[in-house]
Image (cartoon, rainbow, N blue to C red; front, top):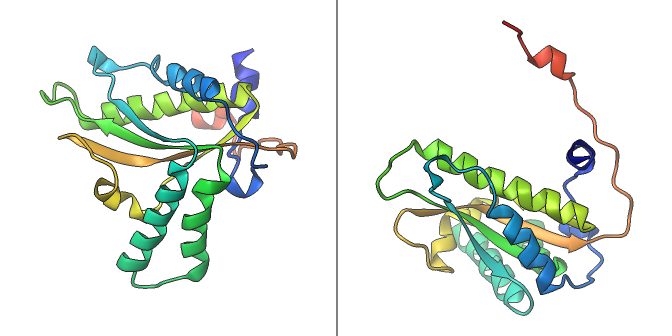
Length: 184
């Protein structure tokens, strides 16, 4: 059963969203799934800032203006995309990772745990009929100017959620798993 969800999950981009709202209850269920990701030494490093409703406009403005102020190669297309994508979505989450202050495990393990939390959210959203997309725009390094980050916390991306109408394409892989495994 879970393998079917894993195989059929796709990135669904803001341009594909139909502007139907996402219920807060669905957002909370998606976040609850994140909280059950594997976590070495139970550091539970995942953190999220949820933009749901009118706050999405401010997020778009911040990203577009930050891009305009910091880029050396300005593109009107990129500016408009950064401004509009948060508003096209039913919800946008800023994905953050809180580093264990004791540094009791390697940083990559906490990044991996956060990525597993996002995978849990993605699969849950997919099962709810909600499309999702993890974006990593260059302006992420400036997010601390817009949201307050705790000491040792870093932003890893934006998680867009939106309802969609069009069927999703079938997935493919370039190589079979047999070509990626060596049995010992």
